[in-house]
Image (cartoon, rainbow, N blue to C red; front, top):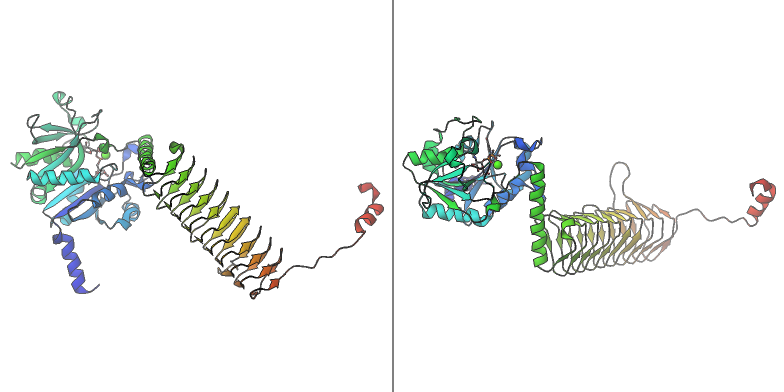
Length: 480
Ligand code: UD1
Ligand code: CA
C-alpha cells in the first residue's frame, strides 16, 4: 500500500465516519461451565460474536466496528477475522465498564459510539438502527435499549424519571435492587449509544462498589445523569432479541430457535422441508424453490442448493453449491464442492473438498471423489476412488476403479478422456493420461499413458486347465 493510501485508510478509520460500534466480547461466560469463551459458542452454525458483528454491519450509517476481546483473545479473533472488524484487547476482565475503558483510545476519535454485547446473538439490525436514530433525535449523551420480558430476573432494571418519561435516572443490577425496585419489569438489553465526549469524560469515575467488584457500564446512566447529561431509554417491542444463554441447554435452545427460523425462511420461499425439526440448516444456507429436503438432512456453512433438487435423508452437505434439479440420495457426505444441474449423487457417496461435478453426472454407492473435475454425464456408479482426476464428458468409470494418485511423496494427476470406458477394478497409476474414447480392460493395472480410441489391458493372461478339478477330486476323495 502506498503512503498516501495508508494515510487515507487511517483517516477513514478515525475521522471519515463519526460512529464507532464496540462489541464487548472479552468475558469468559463462567456460568456456561465451558472451557471455551462464551462468544465462541455456536448457534445456527456461527459463533455468537459473528451474529452480533453481522447485525452491527447492517447499520445504515457508516461505522467502524471494534470487538473488545480478552478471554481466549486469539481464538476469538481468528473466529471472526474475516468479518473485517478491528480488535481491542482487554487484558483483564473487570466488567463491562472496564471493557469500554479498554477501547478508550480506539473510540476517542468518533463523535458517537454504540456498545453492543457479543453474547446477545439475536439482536436485529433494525433494532440497532432504531437505537441509533432514537439517540440522535433525543440528542442524548447516553441512550440505552430496554425491553419487557416475561421474566426480568437477572437483568439490570431501568429506573425512569417518571413512568412515561424517556429519561432514565439509573440502571440497577439484579443484586443491587432495592425492595421497591424488585417490581420493575423494564430491563436493560445491554445495548447503548453514547456521545463519546461525555462518556470518556466520566468513565474514569466508575467504581467497583458492587457484589462482583466490577466496573459496571450500567452505572454510567446514574453518573451521566448526575453530571447533568441527558440519559434516555429506547424501548423495543420484541423482548426475544434480549435472549442470550447462560447454560449449554439455553445455548442449544437458541440454536434450535435460530434453525427453525431458517427452515421457516426457506419454506416461505417455496422449499419443502419434511420434519424440519430433524434437519440442521445453518443460517447462511440458501435453497431454491421446489426443492424437497427429507428428514435428518444437514445443510451447513455457505451451502447453496438450486431449485427442483431433492436432498434425501441422512445427507450432510457443507459449503457446496448445487445447481438445478440435482438429486442427492440417502447418506451422502459432500464438502466444499460444486455440483452442476441434473447430477445424481449417492446413496452413500462422498465428495471431499475441491470437486467440480458436471451436469448430469452420476456418482453412485460408495464412490469417493476428491479434488476432481468430472465432465458432463460422467458415470461412476459403484465403489470407486477418484482423486486428483480430470474426467472428460460421458466417460464411464467401472466398479472398483482406483486412481493411484499418491506415490508416498507427491500427489499426481490422472486424466481420463471424454467417452473413455474404464473397466471394473482397474487401477490407474498417476501421473497418467487415458485418451478420449479408449477402453481399459477390467482388472487392469495401467501405468503408462494410453492414446485415444485404443484398448489397453494390463493384467495377467487367463490360463484354463480342462479337467483339472475332476482329477484333483479323484486324487483326494475324502475332500468331497
Ligand atoms: C449486562 C448488564 C445488564 C443487562 C444484561 C443484558 C452490566 C453490568 N450489566 O449483564 O444490565 O441486563 O447485560 O444482557 O453491564 N464483557 C467484557 N469484559 C468484561 C465483562 C464483560 O467484554 O470485563 C462482555 C461479555 O463478554 C459479554 C458482555 O460484555 O459479551 C456483557 O457482559 P455480561 O457479564 O454477560 O453481563 P450481564 O451479566 O449479561
Ligand atoms: Ca450476558
